[in-house]
Length: 469
Image: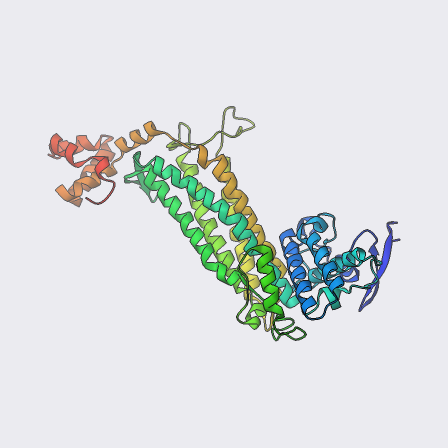
């Protein structure tokens, strides 16, 4: 029994005996970490995708180790127990309670995984949980491995999986929805704006084509980093030399991991780099940071183009999803834009943490790995959900306010730019400034300056100002 009267069993590690909850598969090393790092509560648990990736790695290792002499029954039991980790079942049941804020190598999460899989394998084989017989967490589950190569490999497995199966599809769907609007609105003429001031005409479709290209570029950036994400540190063991592993072990493990995930993982070309640096994750988050930058620009533009409905720009009509004020009846706010921009700000903050962690790899091992991994995975999740929500609840329901756009175009003084080739920049500027000063129209001041009505109507035509002549 522990101090709270809960049933426990006794397990031991190299530091001695520990009381462990009887209904948990983890052992002494996990318990020590749980007691020594009471930081952040359940909200700061090691991310589930990372733990599931550890399960994938342990399953592959057990099957390959059988080829190198591991008893087939032990191998099969470890593989079966690993399947329960991969499914998320054992994470959800509380067998992986450790926080992100632990040793910077992820050693304690590696041992948490070894202990859980070891004890579950013992149970599968009909043994007594906690005895390390017939399955030992270090000798069998962790055979030919080190925390220093398994944990970074699990980071890459979880991040690659999340990028391919979550973020890229969500970002693609948002990009495609913006592109549909760009095509649909290709002939709607509106005023362009530079420096937030009136500029020459543009079509709404052209404006949205810019957003489409930003996200297309973002997808290309994610594709560009994937080759480094697919490189696994497995086989480096403690410092990159591969001590205590066997020739061919890493290559065979990675082949199995690729088969389990349907992703093209390879052994890192230099295992010293793969252990000592987290440059690939900094590069990944750099791409995520750029995607967040693009999304913030797009969300802000849509927010301001939809401002109003009567006293703002009012060129776009955004979906009315929920009441916007507890005091102002009838008010509706651009909430999806606000959520997206907050997500982007968080991702940008995460990028600073990832960069700092990546820059602090010392000698043969980076010891900021749990923090780096959790921030990369969190950013992927936030951007994935944000893109999906913004697409479905905002972009797909946007409608153009054609009347408002036409009115603003008609009132714009920057149509004067069309006069430049005919009367020169200085005379054109004088006409625009006079119209603004007098509160008159561009046409009126142009006529006052001696331009014929026929010439003005021929030269100043917004539909002819949308591209090269």
